[in-house]
Image 1 (spheres, rainbow over the protein chains, first blue to last red):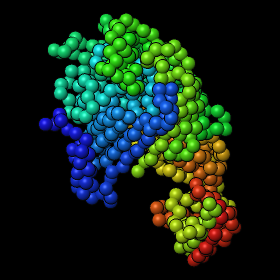
Image 2 (image 1 turned 45 degrees about the vertical axis):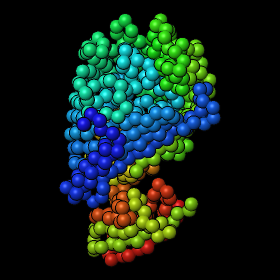
Image 3 (image 1 turned 135 degrees about the vertical axis):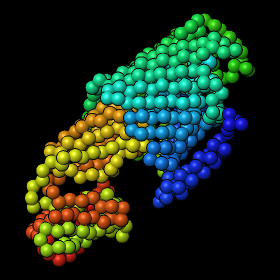
Image 4 (image 1 turned 90 degrees about the horizontal axis):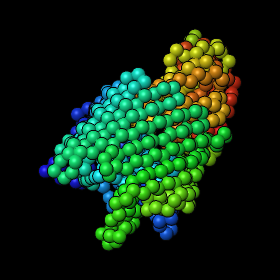
Length: 339
Length: 185
């Protein structure tokens, strides 16, 4: 029954818990806050302006240490429950239970969507499985523990990593994820590993990654290298440079170089996620040879107001199903409202 | 929009005492997070501790006042990485992007307004007013303020709000004095 929790049930439970927490703690007002985001985009794969993504997050502090978070996301033709979890935070230690974006490299919502880049990196696109059945744009169900000690930050998670749109409770905890981050002055270095146990559907899978952020005044350089192991594993990297020009506090310019080597079957699945349909056009997704996709993107981002951000990108690269959406001009208007 | 702030200042006690008052916009709305300070008296010394926290994509507090020479801590107590930078006025700095659990520090050695932002999140902003006086306060949600231990004398009263800065006016603070001060943007 719990494995079939759906959005109305979750939001209802969320509201009840928040109300109960507010009453039991005699808080002055209902402590539910949230953020709503909407992304309007133009890109080479669509005609005109498209409302590409809607995002709603609600959170409630039910005590000093416990917080409930529920979020929902929709794109044209699809919708799903985003991160929905209970969080315990006592300062250096943090535990999350529920539906989470497990820490593996730059995987938080902010790291993915609050950049000058309109598109997420190819290696992190929803349709690209780094190992069979596991992409990096993924919501897991399970538990994650994070601890900070000096310059080190460690995250470990035991989750159900199977692709799923609505469930909060794991079916089986068959995937382990670990991340170690070290802060060395202006450098943040992260090491990531994921291992999935074999089951009756397929063999075990492993992937690893290294990420790095180097910041200087006005300048941020970041990148990830990710490799999936096994005969069908994909590998790829991306490197970003973001710069804030002097006297333009609300402007960022940037560039991204990226490449992915993956089975064409996976890259065509990625193409399908941008509007194609493998079932209707099987010729798109039957090849099993490796293909390399490369793209270079130049970007500018302007904070128009605290609630409106405009990003303009221009991309070049080779023409594969995975890199095709990145070529040419694309723009994004991001609206965010906190309450 | 041209905001006007009205100030009522009351010296409550005989010698050094508390100055209290309320700050309002010209339309009658109370001005929370307004800064009121008195110049012309004793010089300030750096604060022993000052902090601007980052939680839930918010700088806390939104407005703070420090004295010149104070070093402010900027801990990241959020669950995501943040950046803190200021590009104008009293201090230009950029602390880079740093993760949860990390703390960066910045010294402020010049008076004025420091408008801070996060280069990642456009909706994050905060202000630090650096002053060279020990007599200052930030208004609460009802627009009230209280400045303790003010000796009688002549001061320059200054007011500041992120949506409007007040005019500067010489005032004489004496026991029992009650002043109404009008401050324009």
